[in-house]
Length: 144
Length: 144
DNA sequence: GTGGTTTTGCAACATAGTAGCATTTGCGCC
DNA sequence: GGCGCAAATGCTACTATGTTGCAAAACCAC
Ligand SMILES: [Mn+2]
Ligand SMILES: [Mn+2]
Ligand SMILES: [Zn+2]
Ligand SMILES: [Zn+2]
Image 1: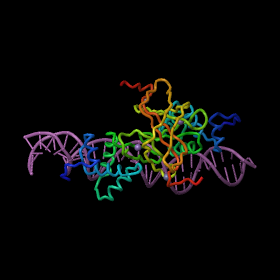
Image 2 (image 1 turned 90 degrees about the vertical axis):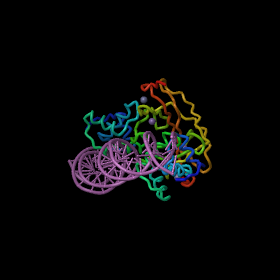
Image 3 (image 1 turned 60 degrees about the vertical axis):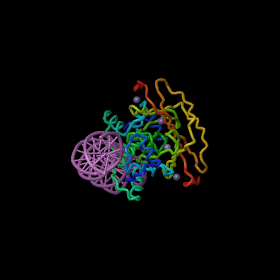
Image 4 (image 1 turned 45 degrees about the vertical axis):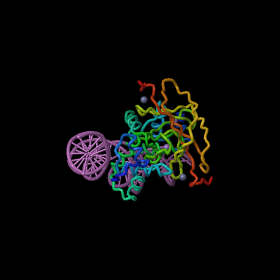
């Protein structure tokens, strides 16, 4: 659509992964980059609609899957049934997350790494550690 | 059904939580106690059927929910769409889990606690930390 | 601009979980 | 042991989330 040769951050990320720069991909990635929390498929679809970007439910699923497979985004399975997607502004995904047990919100904690003092039982081979902190987000306060 | 006054481990756990001792609850809890890994709703339903214990899909969902709400069992949302349930043999649920990215199996790592060196951004209130280690289980080996 | 490949849109399907309500069952009490 | 009542179950129907197959459209290397 644009004949610019100057690429946006989202466009660069997409081409860097060897993917085609499509309207939906760019818009979704920009939404995720701008978000201060992880978003569900539904929330992202809504945001697209608000921007007047016509799209199909299935295409959005596939777009999100592609972003995850490419390592650009991360996917979190929460307590509710919806997976949440997000991108870490800085570099590839290697950080902890905070999950608000009240409102379900999930945020990336970028400067936080688990000091996992692990000695696994024999035979288990460790690839990565996933740390999720549970509690109340600032908005939800927590009265007790 | 039994007129014994001697309670099984499962039965004691159930009454300790103020719940009624029903056939399904006892059987489910015994299945979970005997399992060396977390089980899906479907796997548990199959195990019940194999034991000739007639049950309803919805009842099983409610039984599992009750076990989780009572703090007897834990629920894990995996990458596949199914939640997995398990009980920690020792005491209430406060331990890490290992998730095999090959076969999807989830096991409790009872003697393992994350040394989370956390300083959360202001306003976040921490309740508990959830640590999931990802990799290959002994069975899946890992060729590379 | 053309051609081949990737991505999309649509329709149908699959899976996991939930809600309402009548019936049954466990169990405290006598 | 039997009563009464709350808790738990079984059914049916429904919702939400995600998947598959395939033809049409869009990208982009050339
Ligand atoms: Mn993240
Ligand atoms: Mn566990
Ligand atoms: Zn919150
Ligand atoms: Zn495995």
